[in-house]
Image (cartoon, rainbow, N blue to C red; front, side, top):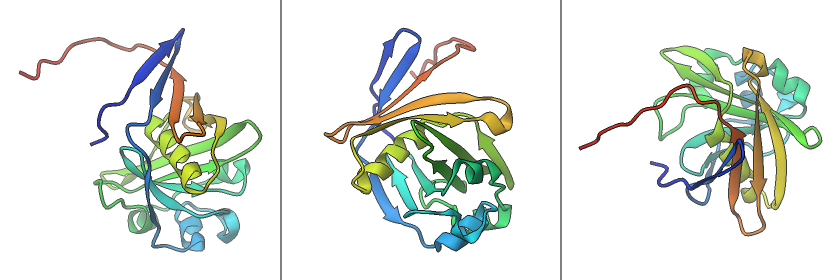
Length: 183
């Protein structure tokens, strides 16, 4: 479990601080195998891929360009082979490419054998911050562009401070409200 996640509000924006420092582990597949897994050419994975967890483990794949991120078309069998987390019951891949201050990202996951795409993945955004910490690339900040390919554009802010704090910011649209009685 991720643990307690501190959340603060400033106007319409909500910011969470990652629940815990990132844990990383190496990926068993080659960069070329991972590129083929997401339907891209062999040279598309341009830096070290890592499994990262700041609360939820996900596969973080650095991609050479925003155009390649947009072109990704995961291959279900290969995603099931190389993208399956040891801590979750689904295969997944979080692709990202830096393109100035706004980066292009996509998050693919499996459900009942189908590959789906999430339009806004705060946990993966936090894990991208963890990837940057693991690679010695902090402090940093970026705006992440996600969801365009599924017709649900979103923008998330990512900031990693010099002390290793990872912060994810986004606006939230309320769709419902309620309470849960756990007792």
